Image (cartoon, rainbow, N blue to C red):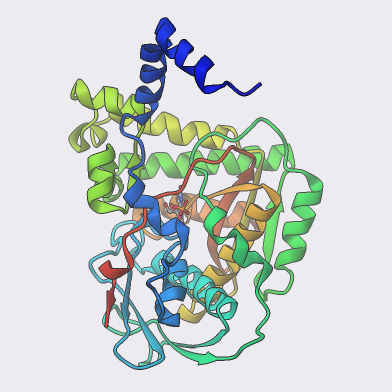
Length: 381
Ligand SMILES: Cc1cc2nc3c(=O)[nH]c(=O)nc-3n(C[C@H](O)[C@H](O)[C@H](O)COP(=O)(O)O)c2cc1C
């Protein structure tokens, strides 16, 4: 029954106001700042350039550590020149920028979908200046007006897509969802595997946990994450990137000085243990894992993997399936070599092939959007 205004005022007058105020105030402590997630509304009415409109959607792409390492040049008419922002790389955990390029593949896929939905064909030429190095463009994208283009059904999922980093619900992956994801991926040249058999899931879970522990216990690789951790609402609002630590618990820990980057770097502290427990609880709750491998590891292939991966995550979003990549055990640095080899064996990735994306699949409530930088921060005209 809806409260009339009179009843409502009586409730307030009866002393509920303070309790209600507190109930509202507590969850707002270190909540996600609205400006940091405004991008999830898509392009504003002021954006009339079709390239900028498509970019406003593309910036919502999943990407490693949410660094959003894109730099866009719009100086040529009807053309987008996409570069990697060389100041936003992960040299310790992604020494060959393989994951960064996968993120750019995700970006290009959403860009093309958004352009088509707006009546433009986006023709993508990869690596127009030759083999990619951080100073050379990833892609040149030519926009041509072409009314009547089909709107990709996955496009509607772009603002709803999330990477679920917390615990999954305690239920198995619905076989119908597994079948739909596998079928949706069949058009791609890249194999998709989804494993939900308990013993295999347990072996994969152990490998994922071991990989995460190696990364956390190797100071230079752990530091790469800690350097992009944004602790509390003010830091999140200032950066609008990286890994957001937010909410009343983070706020409370900040008040007692127990949540600082230095502490998060130091095993045994509340901050370090809390980070580890959070990650491990995520793996413990996984009932299915999946992966995308590729026969070669060419730059073009990394882009194709990104395009396929984001389509998979959007298809999962449509089905209500949550997905979180796990990259640690796939990473190419010496301390991870043995586990990486073990992961290749467990996933039966052939000799010479590359395990590109590995992820857990399940169910969870909406964790809310992660921050995005403003379009103006990475676009030059
Ligand atoms: C190549 C690649 C690797 C990723 N690896 C991880 C990972 O190891 N762990 C994780 O939690 N998320 C991973 N992600 C997801 C990003 O963390 C996520 O996209 C980013 O934080 C933005 O959040 P959103 O996807 O909810 O927008 C990865 C994404 C990409 C494209």
